[in-house]
Length: 168
Image (cartoon, rainbow, N blue to C red):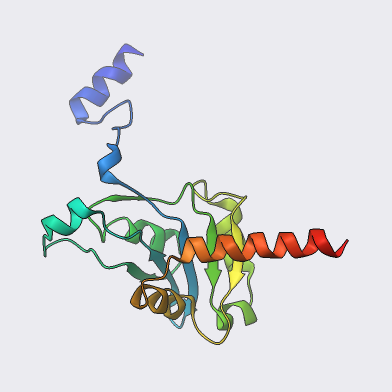
């Protein structure tokens, strides 16, 4: 074991993963998934900027409410997603996945495979299909109208559960 530690020290690698400060972490609650001709597009609905973030207004940082990336597969798109903002994007606690209508009509095996096998995705997350548009378009509309997507999806879920309880 001593040789292993010496090897890591010489190579400049950390044995223990580097911790991430809370201020540098961005938890994602809603992710949109669309398939494209070249692969897959993942869209993330970011929380509204805090007052401190608005005051800073650093134009070199990506502060848009919806961040989109395209790649050949889901794994590459998720890796790419983590490079487009100044914060570490975490999908551990993602509560909702939106799937575009055209993606839902096509073969969902790739989407299911990604969501079930990726170590960062939660198997308790809810899936919704956007009607008449891509997931990216839906998230953009929500951002333009300053609507909290997570809150609306949560309310829909509660309404659905309430209706099912009262109908029994």
